[in-house]
Image (cartoon, rainbow, N blue to C red; front, side, top):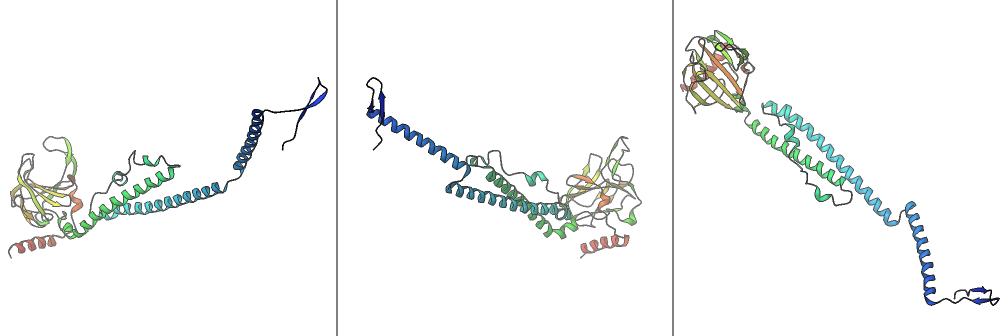
Length: 320
């Protein structure tokens, strides 16, 4: 039971017992309960600031483990990316250069993954940054590995055709050394003998007598054997594959037809003076992926007798 309380009445000069109504009693109890609840809340709040509850300790430990696992995963992805980067550099500068194939630009190796809305569905989760960052790294790695695998497929195919490639790429002079008078014009910029303007001379000119044999400098297929109205006169263009073509212009006669297969050392025409020409000569071009390149870079060190033997071997093969 609660204590009985009294109050002094100055009118009666006596102490009178204090009587509370039921609502007053309920109000007093509620006030006491409110004070107790407030004190308990302050105590719990203060405790939670300085001390973790068992549940909070478990959650923090779990979060720390998750963050550590994400860091380890990101480190492993970064290591894999470094290995792939090394393979890409070797692919561009060694493997593909062996076969004179185009390098794969970084815009292709690094592009093609992701998108502005690709990771939106993860933004609703708590602390989405590690998840999105890791997924982005995985997408980059997956794309780079995919592009590299496609490149290796091409390199393997080129390796299978290496022998064919060696025989197809232009590698000899189109005119035998014994028939050559001189090389009258080099590859590069010069003054045009007709217009007197400075322009690129896209090939090499071999001066010699009319009728001197002109030979294909590599295996291929004749894609043009006609008279060109753009100054080349009688011309033969051979497609050697692997991005290479050769042009033989100002011919006197053409010994091949369009669609005909030719091999290195096969006579395809004779030196002449057709088209826009200042004298008997052969204009010879090497075209790589539709761009003229200096033919001097494709002449080997074949001696005159070796050249004659090559032509003789081809002729012998025809007579069998």
